[in-house]
Amino acid sequence: MQSPEFRRAGYQAIDRICDYHLTLRDRPVLSQVEPGYLRKALPSSAPTEGEDFQLIADDYQKYIIPGLTHWQHPSFFAYFPTSSTFEGILAELYTSSTSNPGFNWSVSPACTELEAVVMDWIAQLLGLDESFYNISEVGGGVIQPSASESALVATVAARSRYIHEHPQVAMENLVLYTTTQTHSLGKKAGLILGVKVRALGVTAQDDFALRGDTLKVALEEDMNAGFHPFILIGTVGTTSSGAVDRLDEIADVAKHYPFLWLHVDAAWAGVAFVCPEYREAYQLPAINSYVDSFCTSFYKWGLIQFDGSCLWVRHRKHFTDALDVTPEFLRTKYGNAGTAIDYRNWQLGLGKRFRSLKFWFVLRARGVKGLQKYISDGIKLNTKFAQSIYESELFSVVTKPSLAMTVFRLSPKSSPQLSTPELNILNRAFYARLAARNDIALTQTDLNGVFCIRMVIGAEKTLESDVDRALALMKSEAMVLLKK
Image 1 (cartoon, helix red, strand yellow):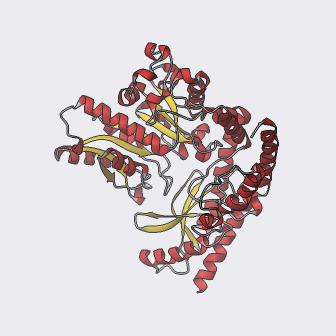
Image 2 (cartoon, one colour):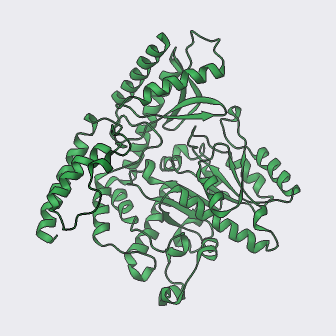
Image 3 (cartoon, one colour):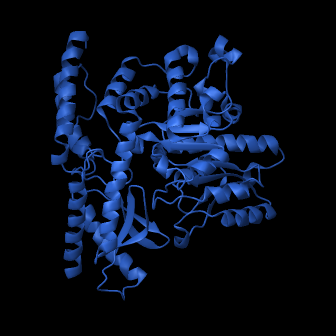
């Protein structure tokens, strides 16, 4: 393809992308295809001769679009939101037009420097302590693909620090702490690194938050048994319930165990720190005063396209000590002099995408106030939805709503005699009815043996009428089920 053909195809692609977003509300939320649909539709091998690009572009519409779940649909309330903005789309287009691996400052200085600047912008935006700024030259921030990689990098650094300080400790005696509500990233980090994972218990009475006393008991038990806890992955805004671990209490305990690295996964809820009114309740003071590393993912709730998870560390030396591998062919004048950041030493892989460009585009186009409004609007919609659940004769809230998330279940007040196992059976049937529909998307979860349903608001196109419609649909399905 030459420039004239690219120009024509590009105009058409932009038109089709615009049409897609304009018609999003009219599409089914969930894909209606069956497993294996695409293999049946496509040839068994790549073409021998190149094909006309118009045919390729049309086949995208014909075969790929029908197999997509529309995460930006106004009735998508499952998992956590995944953003997509026109500003971000254009940034990704520019990024792909100047493809480069970005592993050293010298291979494309703008890629490294923009990431360092943007990460400081975001740190300021969230109210993070200045020790996390790149400009401090002590701590700093780096963009990782996702929160899972962020947690893995932090765990690698924590393990390296612990082994350096305790060289006599056998690897099999190391313990990584999570909670029973921590995202699966904690278990996966343990699997990858070959260390034990202990999930500390949390209770409904504590709103599924880890308490300091629970951590203290676990530390004493494990150390007395000859184990060596080296990291705790705490959470601000757990996946199942939006719970916030009591980082203030955890910090009070952890300061007596200085070898314990504290990483905070705030992949979804951390973006809400752009609104200062949520910072104290969601433990930002404790994050600023104590934690070693902190992560939040703007691709969830920050208007940034996937991927792009923001990871900050209080002492960058712990990252580079653990991850710096510099063969001769990677040495540069500026890297050797330490006058430029080489982000390859802050991550698992060598190369990195130019992710900071979409952050730069979106932050400049929307501004702080635009991002604050987007977050606040989602929280307001959830507050209204949660109030309707509280007032309902059919449903009940399982744990207190968190920002833009409500966890609820079908629990008819007309049948107070139903036990938890009976209610779980009822709610599995209720969720199955909802999941069978193509005009709404929700997610199931389990909170200490209670089967329930998550409602998370975050699509930029979601309006109050969409939330009202979702509630009406839930009531309708519940009534049909109860009659049966």
